[in-house]
Length: 101
Image (cartoon, rainbow, N blue to C red; front, side):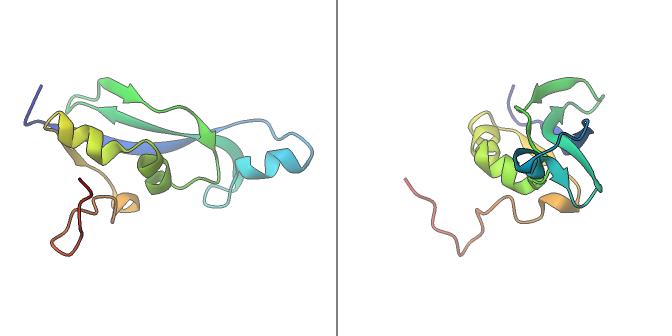
């Protein structure tokens, strides 16, 4: 599967709020609720190709993708991605960026 395009998006899945400091990481300030973030890749028809492990709700989409090394993985299989503005800056392979070998 090379040379294709996938759709990339993140979603916070709402969870029940638990008490205590340990649950503070699950609060999404953007959504104003507690939850877990997942990142998903779909094909052009919306069929799920890959989904990330759940991360705390306060994690940003771009941070989760960087943690999963998603751009590297997509490049290795020859895929590009279409995403919303929350992912601007994810592809750090610009002309001024040194790529580690």
